[in-house]
Image 1 (cartoon, helix red, strand yellow):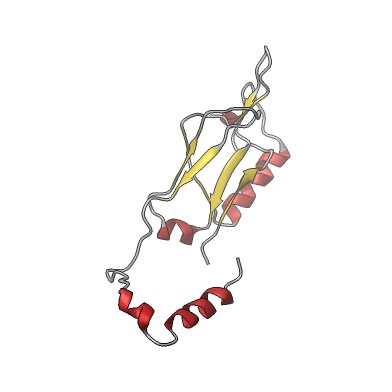
Image 2: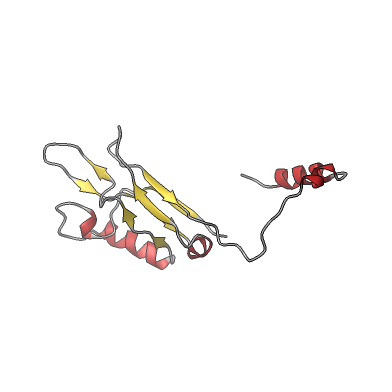
Length: 134
């Protein structure tokens, strides 16, 4: 099943993702190995390099926030991207994930209002909908 996980991982993957960083830590290596080992897709960040700043006179910047995707997620959303937005109050920049269009097969779904008049149709849809766990 396709899935996407996003958040503040409080780690960077690469030296370029932390200002002033010149050495890899074991946590950085482990984080990158985990992403690669699980076959996850780490999307490039558009709109900026870093997702966190300490906002001090001697500013530190890091990319701590990201979305990781399963490979089958990208198959369904081939135009997916993550974009950094303007920071408002937090020391983290918000990230917007844009999915583009869902890839469907060539058959399109059509709904006809007359289905609403068919005996039991609404109850059937309600039972299907309520069978899912969100």
